[in-house]
Amino acid sequence: MTSNLQPPAESGRIVFLDWLRVIACFMVILVHSIEPFYLGGPEGTYIASWWDAFWTTAIDSALRPAVPLFVLASSYLLFPLKTDTVTFFRKRFTRVLIPFVIWSLLYALVPMIGSGGEIDMAANLKNLGVNFMMHAGHLWFVYMLIGVYLLMPLLSPWIDKVSRKEERGFLILWAFTTILPFFRPLAVSITGTPDLWGECPWNEFGTFYYVSGFIGYLVLGHYFRKYVGEISWGKTLALAVPFWLVGYAVTAGGFWHIMPRELGFPLSAPYQTAVDMETTWNFCTIGVMMQTVAYFLVIRKFSASGTIYSKLVQSCSKLSYGVYLMHMFVLIPVFAMVKSWGIPTLAVMLLSAVLTYIICFVLARLIAFLPKSKYIVG
Image 1: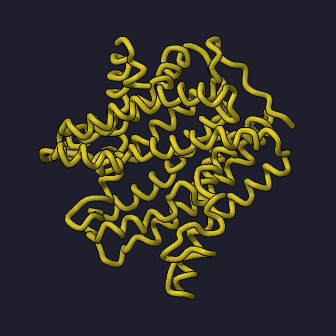
Image 2 (image 1 turned 180 degrees about the vertical axis):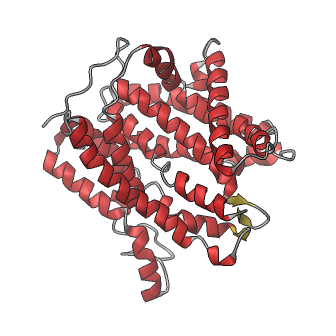
């Protein structure tokens, strides 16, 4: 069955993609409102109480599909290319790369309110030539997105020619790569290293390297658009709910299991402990992938295009990239303020995210009135 797209809004936009961007953008901000409850402290990992551990696990485990949802949205709209390669790169990089450079410079040169210290501008500018800065770690997403854009012209002729069966076969192979992190502990127990199928200290490019990662979401977005037609709410939920429940069980269960709760609370451990805890939270792992599919199936049903959509959702969607780029400047002081009120952990998480989202949207909306604002907020 070929896809039966929703009727576009009067502006020609695809309604559910605007809802998706708004939801995913808020999810990202909420993720970053939760991070201080398990990252920090002198060693790098710090969880103050059992309740902080519980709410971090319970909420953040449901939010990890935010980034894959953005990739699915880009794929749904842009893949395969509908223009020549030069035009595609000019439009994408103008709207993505230039704002990214501007905000990277701002994070390098402007101290964050509430961050607790000055910044080394010279060191930050030097680091920008190599990678993003740790205090602007959310910008990793843009590096990944640019990489996906670079692949689109190469993969467009392929995706146009392969059959539905062949495309599904690739997605099955890619889905297998999302369980590779669970094979690595087994490899350690057998060989003493986490290397799998050709990986070794001098070669990180194993057998499944080239069919793994975010390329799967790129192909999945195309598959949804071309082959997954309109389905009823009943069938949607019959598919989405089991997918979400299993995926959530993996993400939340893995995070909670790896957390060294036996050390007691407050829990202080090296930074690597948090990295290990996030194993099942990684964006290209099976649990996150299954939740992403579930969310996408449900959000595809969002067709409301009335006043709330036209006056608020569409505007928020258009400015979502700008909100994403700037939100750490706002979140850090907002989080510090809200936490100082002495309210429960859950309230701090949610209120910090809501206030940050509102403030960033207002700021992005004001910037949008400036000439050439697309170079700032996308």
